[in-house]
Length: 254
Image 1 (cartoon, rainbow, N blue to C red):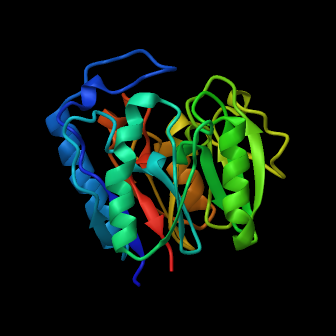
Image 2: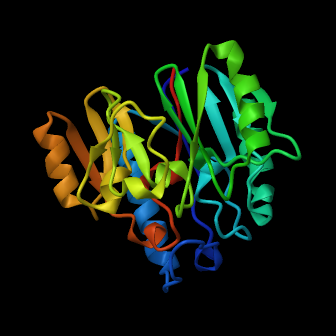
């Protein structure tokens, strides 16, 4: 199986999606569709094979496919989103990963878990405990990943939607954050501060390359100075909905 990126085209109703910690601002659905296409093109250009989950036009947040699952060593743990209206997004995503031949597990009631709360770095899996992921969801994920040799580390969140809204990691495992006050940083061994919110959100494309938003040019310069290549894409319409580059894909590494 090649390296696969799962994506889902945005709903024309994206402006009706959920916002929690930011003010609602107008969203251009047509521009969001163009930006999503450019995002997918960037993944393709980096060598990722694209697999599309069928669009869900009646589900405003459906482009944020990351929240529907956690993929680890051939296992797809299908989530149970903390926002009840988003749970209808999961079956379509599950059908696609079943077709790919991945092993399947589920987070069950009373657990809730959003994929955006899960940051995998080597054998360690950090999981945000906040408004979308509860303690039972973390317990279930720990149980599902135990057979993959992973250590699940909970991270209490403060005023932020998801863990990966506040912190991600560079290809060498260095954790990066723009505002450490958004979460409890004590579970992390080290943390590098970046100058812009969007700089805290990167997708690792390979061992030397990250995908990030054009909204964080100073952070991009910092990463390039550290010896990483940067692929920058405009995701402004998704940022208005508390989204970022990590939310728009699930990378299935082989």
